[in-house]
Amino acid sequence: MWSGDELDLDAYLARIGYEGGPAGGELRPDLPTLYAVHRAHTAAVAFENLDVALGRPVGLDVKAIEAKIVHSRRGGYCYEQNSLLAAALERIGFEVSGRGARNRTRGDALLAVTHAVLVATVDGKPWLCDAGFGYAGPTEPVPLRRPGTVVRQGEWSFRVRGEAGGVLVLCALRAGRWRDLYAFSPQPYHPVDYVVLNHYSSSHPASSFVGRVVVQYPGQHVRRALVGSRLTSLYPDGRTEEQVVGADELAAVLDREFGLRLSERETAELVAIHQAED
Image 1 (cartoon, helix red, strand yellow):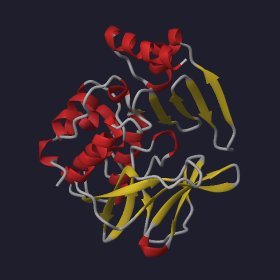
Image 2 (tube, helix red, strand yellow; image 1 turned 60 degrees about the horizontal axis):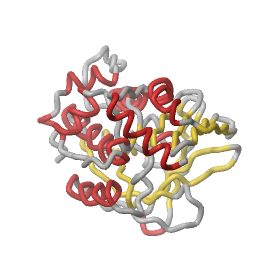
Image 3 (cartoon, one colour; image 1 turned 180 degrees about the horizontal axis):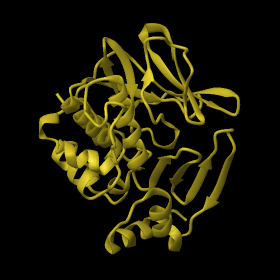
Image 4 (cartoon, one colour; image 1 turned 90 degrees about the horizontal axis):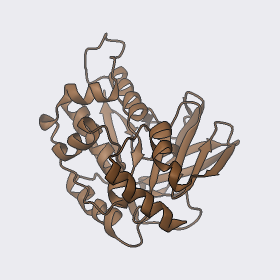
């Protein structure tokens, strides 16, 4: 389903810095490998919409994603990142299916289903996998078999709770309060469904990704998000810090905070967008 047979798995593993799990580096469709690959991916690849901001098409076929994220060492947003992760997991031997999620980080507003997540099944048990929710998302798989179970990922805590109709909601603990991140139903999504969602997110005027820079990274001790000209740092205790990034600082911030190095032309185009937002 995810074209895992077309993926250069060795190049992908090198890109994410995968050093093997408890099995001594042997890849198996087991829980330790799932954790190790997921953790390595989120640590190595930044969430970013720079192609969308630059008005470029975003391809979701495996070779296009591989060329961008693996070989050009770029990042990507949810459709790219989770399609790549799904292809790698499928190639290793995991059973992987997609889901469509509604973002719930914007208060009570009912948003359309625009977020792509994955469910990997290991020994008959489902695990939420998501390498594409930016700085607020999980960095490791989250169990789905027992809604309400609190999962610690380093200094960050997550849980999944259930709602009517089989809907599951991923929540994060922030400043002593559980906050909804997104909700998803049991309906499986396929790669072709993500093509449709990607078209909206990359081109519709109402999309939050069109016309501005969005780059995020879920760090171990601090999580950072650059949205437009505002760089936000989120700490495990819920504290946040904000600073304004000037156009002359943009390239340095992308490199230092998110590991993204662009060509002079790309940088100049993004600086122009940055200045227009100001």
